[in-house]
Length: 590
Image (tube, rainbow, N blue to C red):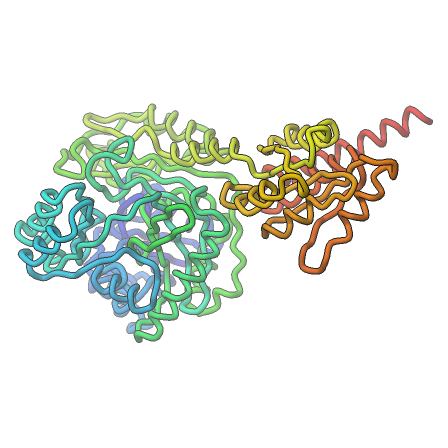
């Protein structure tokens, strides 16, 4: 099978790298390619917008599949032309690519189909735009309507900056015809993330979550760029948020585009702003993100050719995508001055040593061969990408490799992935289980649950609340548990033992009850009181006393492990340890 990849950046190098792994592929061409791509593909000197030249080449070489990288090719209608000539090509046609080609279309589309996004207004007249800015105040976001290589979005922290952005776009024509119209929208707060999926117009098959770093410098400072690094997965996108995005963003977008007479096939990339549980769409892209493609394709274990063909044929529902569970990170190395003017032709040193770092692939973005040596040929020059057992190891490997590479005037951010590490540290210390007991005298028993959580490195909180003496406190603990981040509650009480039931009646979280021995009935009264809950108020009831407290913690851990691979591994280790203990006891007896 012969494959043509269109593009010359880090995204295209990662696509060629992934396609090269397919047993179905015998030859890869890339137009125009770069110094790194030429090691795996034959580079062809054709522009990404030379549609006539590209189709002539595809016919001449009998190309079986063309994969489009950049948005410029898509909005130029390359898919339409190839399909008209009966050639197989992956990507949305011109009508569908308007989702990226026009921010005005996209914002109005989002509003029409009630897909969450920031409030906005469209302007053709700079005077009216400035008058609106005076009315709204700052901060605001000013966006050029058309394509601007990721640089047409200006976040203005003052009214003065917002008006200057209007002048830059409409008067100075910094982005050419892309600035004939502009959008002024509210400035959303939160953390950005990328949600990228394959779609055949009916099925949406999402890749793992990822997060880009748009600002040029550390701490998200400096001007916006095409992207200075990315990592996957992005912990800010929880399972609940991912499910929400599929239901409220991705699927409605595919259905809405079909209703608009613009059926969508290819990659659909939603740029999101996430603030707690609030999710809003910042933008759509119609192709793989760059640099998100690099870490995402490194995690993809399936044959990407199978996915491309399933999208083209409308049978994506038959694909089961396999993903490497290990995290990946990409650090972009850029030319000094980027995203403004920069020098090119600087010889790059250390590429081989960097590539020898375990788990690292150095993807070329803006490079060329000059006098037999690899030299810089763009603003973003390299994407040093690494996979690791955990995110900190992936980050360490990427930066170890980046430190081995140099050219005159190179720079890179030193904080790629820091948000994820900070969030992980925060999550690891934020309690996810609440242990409640009716009296402090119950502590020696309930400590068995706490000790097990400690051994499993599960953060928990412990308190006293009585269903009878402090019912308001018990109810408040339960009603606020979910917003505090708790996922499970364990309640220990003796005698009448109404505590677990009271808590269960005031929360939707799972409640596990532990009956305690606090009377002459040796805990049987508490056992019956805990297990006999009315319909609709479920409590999972354990055995009496310390064994029950420990089992409550074991059950809670198993529930948490359903969505946490680290915990699932620890549960498996615990089961093996119990089996070994039994074997050892058997050995001693025999």
